[in-house]
Length: 281
Image (tube, rainbow, N blue to C red; front, side, top):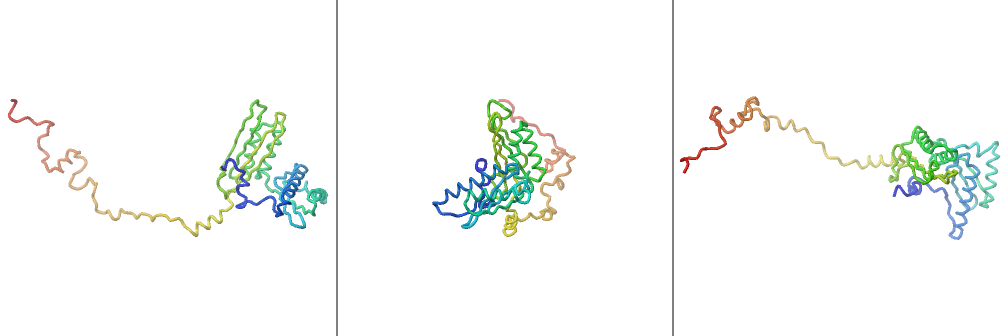
């Protein structure tokens, strides 16, 4: 199922955390969930050019805290914090509580799957070849130190009459390994021929390597003992050796056989048939 499930949802609770962290009563759960959706939709539309791959929301009884991960924090904060004040006021109208907005910078956008997917989608909207966009994104990501990347685009590629799916990948993408830090992103490109879906998987290495190494040190592998060198025990053992009473190899196999049987070497050669005694009847 590693090819079908969302890599982030598969690893929640193991190496990844929820994007929304709050508790509420059952009758208030639906309204709170819709409120989170509206906040994310507003921030994604208003801050799309800033590159916002992730929005985290924390709630308690008194306040709502919003963490905006972005590649260009200057566009979110604005001059003197003017832009972030507008964002805070708009979010307070949606949630109805005091809001604290925190901006988290994404230092390596080429290693973020969501930003890579949005970049490829924007290039497709500008009529850039999908192969060129995919290969360029793969090259930049691998140069930044990723261990693997996989990109999939699906739709009417190049204006074709029949929609199809194209895949490009480089490195390794262990989707079944839970401890593998795999980032996943999806975005849609709105072209004149229709929508083109872009999916990106980026493998950044294993997260639980320290605990794995500690487990190995605590429980070393049971390896069989190495075999001792038995050449010392076979000194003087001439089994299989042609030296000894059998003579040298120069005599050939006929001489060796004769030596084994004890027959004289100069005897008459044997024939395949022996004459019958008494003659013919």
